[in-house]
Image: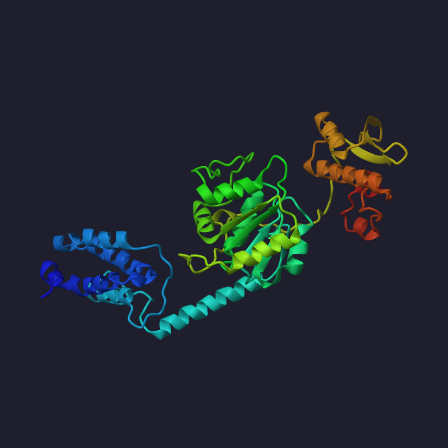
Length: 411
């Protein structure tokens, strides 16, 4: 009789035998199958009525402490000590149900098939979050962030080859970083993030990336020790950050804009070995991001007059200034705002209380921006239409004319 059989109740012996044999092998100490077996045994022993069974908990906890970082869920061993331990637990503890993990080639084939399906999904639907980037080969292992540089991504993808999965810019140390992180987590092929280009003044997104990898975040999701202005990642979770820090290695080429040097560094990174991830499948997204309500934009059936009046925007090419006339709804001219920048004119109108509806404020901002562009480019400005395009009769008949001075609103 072995020491295990002599010291513990009979129904616990078979599972403990499998666990003890498996824990002697390093591959089992890194396997999700053995982790599942230890977790299952812990629950079964903790809930058992017999005190002698509950006394086995320290033994299980000792094995759990001896586990290494999980490198794989299951590698399809013909003899799976973890799976067989769960089977023995299920045979002798009524509350335990045998898991789907089982020994033999069939389990391995199933997992390989699932993995292939995941990879195919990555290639077809990745990246899931919109941003300013260009996709290369989704199965590549390197992503490049060009910080504030707008021209580099396209140049890099053009010559980067299959190692380069994606290249794009990131100006900000909060929302910009969040989008980068979420897209990288959605593709476990990517193991390297190369930082290059020049940082946007004040934001220092590259510093936030470096500190995020090095130190992580605090309880308020603020990147620790970052010199960035506001590196708070409200649309990520602690789990997202942990996965990012495990999956991604950073290459610091901040300030470098030479395409040849960046591509060379990307190829060198792709050749380097990386640690096996403790997770097999990509992250679908942040839990926070998945709760965001998505709305379909629709044109309003009717635009109502603002009780504070309406505006006529008149860009003056000769002076380079914009005249913005404010009329009461009875047609009396009440105010004239003059300036060179549309944003300043809009702010003045708001401060003076000349707008009382959000849709009217959005309309005025759009028209002032168009007028400013027309002055800078020398193009023709037409109010209530895209540059060079007048409203169609169809817009009037459909009741979606945006010209608040148009007679169709008085009908």
